[in-house]
Image (cartoon, rainbow, N blue to C red; front, side):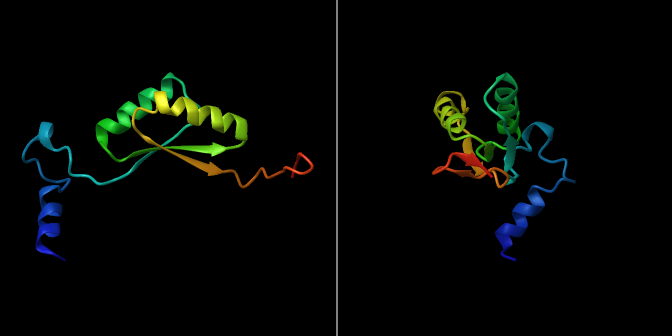
Length: 104
Protein backbone atom coordinates (compact mmCIF):
# COMPACT_ATOMS: atom_id res chain seq x y z
CA UNK A 1 0.00 0.00 0.00
CA UNK A 2 1.43 3.40 -0.91
CA UNK A 3 2.54 5.36 2.12
CA UNK A 4 0.31 8.39 1.39
CA UNK A 5 -2.80 6.18 1.12
CA UNK A 6 -1.92 4.46 4.38
CA UNK A 7 -1.32 7.83 6.07
CA UNK A 8 -4.68 9.10 4.83
CA UNK A 9 -6.44 6.06 6.25
CA UNK A 10 -4.68 6.56 9.56
CA UNK A 11 -5.53 10.28 9.63
CA UNK A 12 -9.19 9.60 8.81
CA UNK A 13 -9.59 6.70 11.18
CA UNK A 14 -12.99 6.50 12.81
CA UNK A 15 -11.19 5.87 16.10
CA UNK A 16 -9.19 9.08 15.98
CA UNK A 17 -10.40 12.04 18.04
CA UNK A 18 -7.87 14.37 16.45
CA UNK A 19 -8.03 17.00 15.10
CA UNK A 20 -11.45 17.21 16.77
CA UNK A 21 -15.16 16.67 16.19
CA UNK A 22 -15.65 19.92 14.26
CA UNK A 23 -12.84 19.28 11.79
CA UNK A 24 -13.23 15.60 10.89
CA UNK A 25 -15.11 16.31 7.66
CA UNK A 26 -13.57 15.61 4.30
CA UNK A 27 -12.04 12.26 5.19
CA UNK A 28 -14.66 10.13 3.52
CA UNK A 29 -14.93 9.29 -0.14
CA UNK A 30 -18.17 7.38 0.40
CA UNK A 31 -21.01 8.01 -2.05
CA UNK A 32 -24.41 8.84 -0.57
CA UNK A 33 -27.36 7.59 -2.64
CA UNK A 34 -30.69 9.28 -1.98
CA UNK A 35 -33.65 7.30 -3.37
CA UNK A 36 -36.34 9.65 -4.65
CA UNK A 37 -39.87 9.27 -6.00
CA UNK A 38 -40.15 12.84 -7.24
CA UNK A 39 -39.27 16.31 -6.04
CA UNK A 40 -40.80 17.57 -2.81
CA UNK A 41 -39.64 19.20 0.38
CA UNK A 42 -38.53 15.90 1.93
CA UNK A 43 -36.22 15.24 -1.02
CA UNK A 44 -34.68 18.71 -0.73
CA UNK A 45 -34.02 18.14 2.99
CA UNK A 46 -32.55 14.68 2.30
CA UNK A 47 -30.22 16.12 -0.35
CA UNK A 48 -29.09 18.93 1.98
CA UNK A 49 -28.32 16.40 4.72
CA UNK A 50 -26.51 14.06 2.31
CA UNK A 51 -24.36 16.94 1.07
CA UNK A 52 -23.52 17.88 4.67
CA UNK A 53 -22.08 14.43 5.37
CA UNK A 54 -20.52 13.76 1.95
CA UNK A 55 -19.92 17.01 0.04
CA UNK A 56 -19.47 16.33 -3.66
CA UNK A 57 -20.41 12.67 -3.27
CA UNK A 58 -24.22 12.70 -3.50
CA UNK A 59 -26.44 11.09 -6.14
CA UNK A 60 -30.22 10.94 -6.27
CA UNK A 61 -31.64 7.69 -7.64
CA UNK A 62 -35.00 7.56 -9.42
CA UNK A 63 -36.70 4.54 -11.02
CA UNK A 64 -38.32 5.30 -14.36
CA UNK A 65 -41.83 3.86 -14.42
CA UNK A 66 -43.24 6.41 -16.84
CA UNK A 67 -41.33 8.30 -19.54
CA UNK A 68 -43.44 11.47 -19.25
CA UNK A 69 -43.08 11.65 -15.47
CA UNK A 70 -39.34 11.01 -15.76
CA UNK A 71 -38.94 13.80 -18.32
CA UNK A 72 -40.82 16.21 -16.03
CA UNK A 73 -38.59 15.19 -13.12
CA UNK A 74 -35.44 15.78 -15.18
CA UNK A 75 -36.66 19.28 -16.08
CA UNK A 76 -37.46 20.11 -12.44
CA UNK A 77 -34.13 18.62 -11.36
CA UNK A 78 -32.25 21.40 -13.12
CA UNK A 79 -33.82 23.88 -10.69
CA UNK A 80 -34.34 21.81 -7.54
CA UNK A 81 -31.60 19.16 -7.69
CA UNK A 82 -29.36 20.99 -5.21
CA UNK A 83 -26.29 20.23 -7.38
CA UNK A 84 -26.62 16.47 -6.91
CA UNK A 85 -26.37 14.12 -9.85
CA UNK A 86 -29.64 12.48 -10.90
CA UNK A 87 -29.36 8.78 -11.79
CA UNK A 88 -32.40 7.33 -13.56
CA UNK A 89 -32.78 3.56 -13.50
CA UNK A 90 -35.05 1.74 -15.93
CA UNK A 91 -37.59 -0.43 -14.14
CA UNK A 92 -37.13 -4.10 -14.98
CA UNK A 93 -40.76 -4.76 -14.01
CA UNK A 94 -42.46 -2.58 -16.56
CA UNK A 95 -41.53 -2.81 -20.23
CA UNK A 96 -43.67 -0.82 -22.64
CA UNK A 97 -44.08 -2.12 -26.16
CA UNK A 98 -44.37 1.17 -28.05
CA UNK A 99 -45.81 -0.44 -31.19
CA UNK A 100 -48.88 -1.74 -29.38
CA UNK A 101 -48.79 0.56 -26.32
CA UNK A 102 -49.28 -2.41 -24.00
CA UNK A 103 -47.52 -2.98 -20.73
CA UNK A 104 -46.07 -6.49 -20.37
